Amino acid sequence: MTPSRPQFVTLCGRIFRDTDSSYFPRATYRGRTIYFCTESCLGAFLADTEAFYKAHRNSEKTKGPIKKEEHESME
Image (cartoon, rainbow, N blue to C red; front, side, top):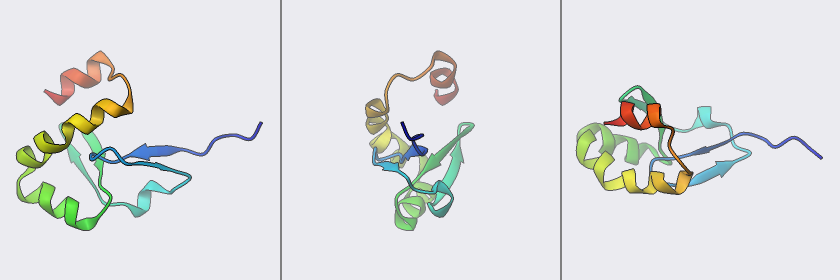
């Protein structure tokens, strides 16, 4: 069995596999690193962080269960 390569999920819910996350725009929000698919999404996030996060946070539910301590840090 070959080892799986890392994956990451953007705030909008896109899952990237076999991709180096260092090439994607990111920001730190509430102690977490949040990845974006494009620079324009990062720009929209920086322009109105709370509105952008609220509009896209439901996509995080597709990532799987959130650990209790991680959930508390998001609030």
